[in-house]
Image (cartoon, rainbow, N blue to C red):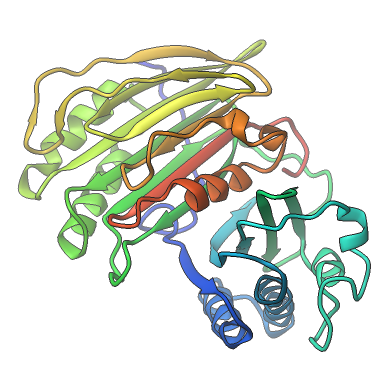
Length: 358
């Protein structure tokens, strides 16, 4: 068994990682819906009126850009946290046309007009964190975060991995049968991804049981955690799940993984993808064997995990330069391009934390 650690919970909600709200933006009439969705997250995170106003500006500018300039635009929002401070994450995703001159796009007045701010320039001034990924012909992803208090620049974070996530219920459902949780210190991070059988309330109940059991047994090895979750899920409809334990080493980290069912886990770098296989079966119903797989994890590589709401026909090298961006950028790109649309869909992306604020 791995050496126990005293972990800190870095998933921002009691259930685990947050469920993402996704709003399709194809004309200006949806901008208000995006703003209200982001404000609902800000209120739930107890941001004050000033910080909520900033969230509103960022949401309005991001959604307006999508309505005026993008194809297949979508606005994503969810809660997040930074050094224990709650915040709002906002992601604008589109399938084109992409930007040839990103510096010019940040100039005031280039992207939008007649709104509270001035497009991407306003987002850059207002957001506490901002990252943009754009490829001409492929599309643009704008990621912004606003916290209850502005982060202290350069402050050390006691974490091993940076986390990006998109967790979406299938259309028409409010309950999400997918769930995830991350518990970590600077030396060890443990990740759970769970997909309750089917979708809707009963699937969400199975995911909740898995997350609660994971937290109780988080100091154990991945195979021991999966075994405990398997037993706890016997009273539910069952689930597919994967558990990854990341341990810091002198030159990077080591990943130990145990999975059951059709969740996917892989270490990806430019031109390479190392799969971490899952065993056949359904946790809570029938699992014939528990087996762990171990891989070294070096800088420049991301760990990606996703449920079967995302197809497996993706390659990281199809997204030139994305592995140096915030992990949430990769999660949003895979959701945009590979979501099946007939089941809950969750993508997690992790990068070894390199020090500093993020």
